[in-house]
Length: 118
Image 1 (cartoon, rainbow, N blue to C red):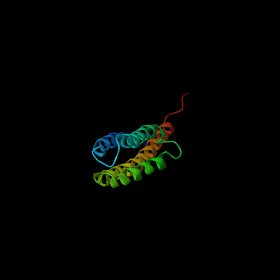
Image 2 (cartoon, one colour; image 1 turned 45 degrees about the vertical axis):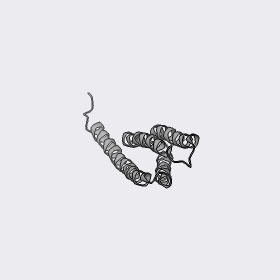
Image 3 (cartoon, rainbow, N blue to C red; image 1 turned 90 degrees about the vertical axis):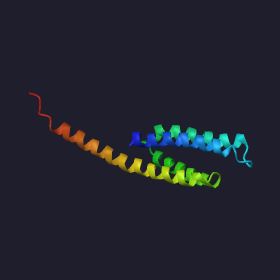
Image 4 (cartoon, rainbow, N blue to C red; image 1 turned 135 degrees about the vertical axis):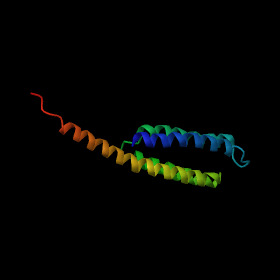
């Protein structure tokens, strides 16, 4: 699960950075505000890469997805991009857990099928 979720978060890192560049063209937003919010979100993406398997990591990831969708109120394209990344996040968590379960079953089967050493 960790690899899939981390890959999604790294993709989001870049999308948030590019969204910050687009948001700088908004006359109502200061450059400082744009890069403070974008920077915090980008750092959160990187931190979550290491926290995904810890308690609350997936929930924080969902909070990031909601924030990404909500950023569509500033940059309308982000409604679409946020929805795409929310779907990717769901797939990463869902299929990542299935892969982890399959790996655990395979390791258990491989461990139980080894003959005893005499």
